[in-house]
Image (cartoon, rainbow, N blue to C red):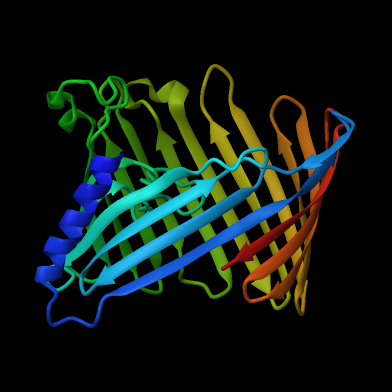
Length: 311
């Protein structure tokens, strides 16, 4: 990891040479703390909810920069992991963008379930933006899915991802991707309709192995409509296989000033269901507190309180 950090800083310094006429370099620090407590009847105990402490560092020098993220995800330990460590650059008047390292990119990911997300992926990404609204490119991993970092270098191109996003202003955003994989080829895509004010309408599709579509194909649909302070919506999914697996989850929320009250009712194949109400209160522009509860078909009752603080 030390070699990776040195390499990223070196590339950033080279980028600075090409940004001599740009605004002065900027170093920005940020982060968040998400913590709280939870109780559930399955353990009959009150415990500290798994917490996340995140620290971000962003160095920008014109069209080039470095991004780092350290975070911990467990309330019982203070050990940090490196979630992001990358250099980036905008080339040819922002017609192309490269990222190299431990990435943080979701440009080509589907908007609801995040199929195709490169968040946490280790490798090199090139985005090309030839016309307004179009972003296409490729990602080459430095670690293959089956052979790990010790695998032959020739296997790396076999695991590449080719993807793109096309945003048609006022109509829809379309995403499509092809992840070649060493042993399996994944295909995914989505359409996010933006033509109607206050309406969110998303359709997604994913197959983790195109050679076995009958057992790996998943459809997802999400829609939500806001009517003033009231919002109603629903999430659905269907997964093909020996038997069809499905989920239906209607939801509702109502906002009064700084308080949002809402909930969802989830029904799934196999006689699975849960009721999940919540209340969120915005303390200020950086902090929110949330109370939530859940009751499911296993007769497990859960409730908790979480605090999210951005800094």
